[in-house]
Amino acid sequence: MDLGLKGKTALVLGGSSGLGAAIATSLSREGANVAIASRDKDKLAKTIAGFAGQGLALQWDLADLSVIDANVSEVESKFGQVDILVNNSGGPPPTTAAGADPELWRKQFDAMVLSVIGTTDRVLPGMRARKWGRIITSTSSGIVSPIPNLAISNSLRMSLVGWSKTLAREVAADGITANIVLPGRISTERLGVLDSAKAKREGKPVEEITKQALATIPAGRFGDPDEYGDVVAFLASTRAAYITGSTIRVDGGLIASI
Image 1: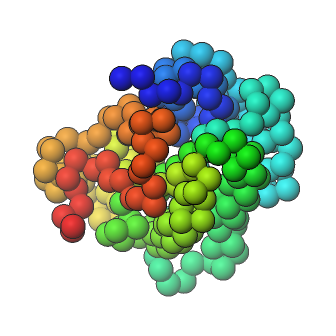
Image 2: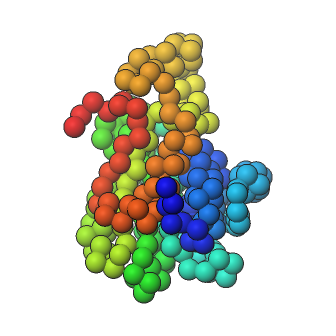
């Protein structure tokens, strides 16, 4: 199936590792020119090296809202205006809902929410002018079933769901789609860090935490990052033009609710 992505320009925030890198790599395999943003220069270079086509590495601290215009302008100078924006941010540190430092909430709000809104607002005029665009926001299963000790993640990612759903209705007539993608337990470095932290809190071996987690997944395994990246690539494609305002779960059946 031709996804119609050859020559399209994609910008993937948080694209140097984990789910972001998988998304960027999948888009590259489909022929898109892909710019990836991250603070980690070495990880950026490693991910770009695995691309099938052209790539651009942007050292970008998402919490710094002042650099959005300059960084998007750099993408436009190299590849042209952004057709596909993938909003993906690193996960905040584990915290309870009560007692977290307000400054931590504020910093994470800038990095996880305002950066997404600001970058989207920067690329939207071009999408509207061309009558084509894809805005895909990667979140977490915590937006449906809040994950214990991840209060900041649960809360801030939920705000992006409301924003994306509202945006979808505003831009649909311009040929632009806006969708949320929700990962379950996908085998990334982040998942390992969270499981290790949980094992430490509960005084259990990490292997036991992993076994307990697997027992909750009907598919009986963790997801492969490439499986997640390919779902995003489809949503970015010309074939997915009638999917908008949706939340797509990629979780092996983990979330039991309808």
